[in-house]
Amino acid sequence: MFDAGISQDNLLSIGSYAKYSIVASKAMQVEEFKLKNDKGNGMYSAALNSYQSFLADVTQVSIKDDIDVTWSSKFRHPS
Image (cartoon, rainbow, N blue to C red; front, side, top):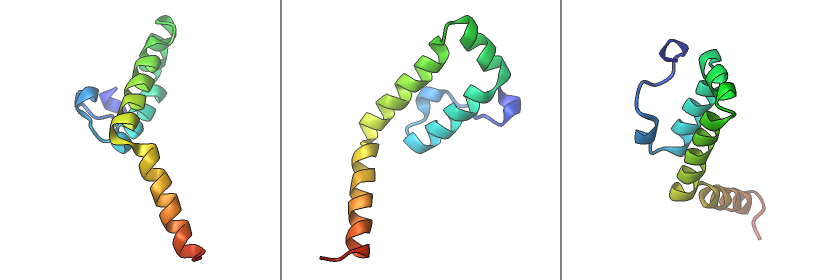
């Protein structure tokens, strides 16, 4: 997978939701990953998705997105 331009860091050491999402997405496109994931009945992609959900919860990504949307719409449509 390293040939595909994917980080050699341990995935669990990535604390940024955005960075992890990019790396996980790239990993899922690698043929070797796809073959092993198929053989493992989706367990590898399930693990990646579970950690991504964990990071979203820990970093409160959805809350930050809601704040950003509210904040930006306030300036576009002042009351």
